[in-house]
Length: 168
Image (cartoon, rainbow, N blue to C red):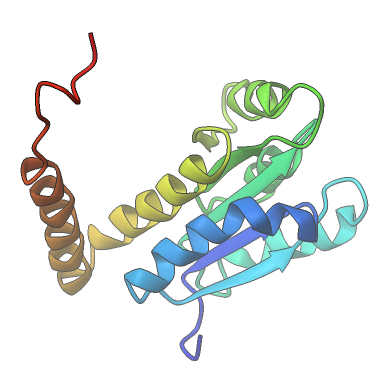
């Protein structure tokens, strides 16, 4: 995007983009300037610290961090910046994201990470949460978000289920 990013979308490896693209799609839908980077807590810890240390000065208002396995990325970012971190657990191991979910949600008192659902739904919701956070100070974005939610409501209200389609 051409404008300076307001939201950073980071992930531990390029493979995680299959999930994290759901967050990016939401940010694009609302026209929120963002950046997408691979920042590994374990393989590039110095880059992680540099990214977190510079976040405020670069104008980031939220960081969406996706991580699998031990999922240290969201917590380490949160430990190094006051920019709110939204953690997205990614199913990257035999535990199907349960390990990541527990790692992200169990942050110690004083280092909060907003933790979303495992996978693409969580990534999409992280994008929407970032939009909602920005909308508190951006009236035009708030209008877009209200309209988007009304459209989702209208989609549900337009659905009709016949008796032969309803579950038992």
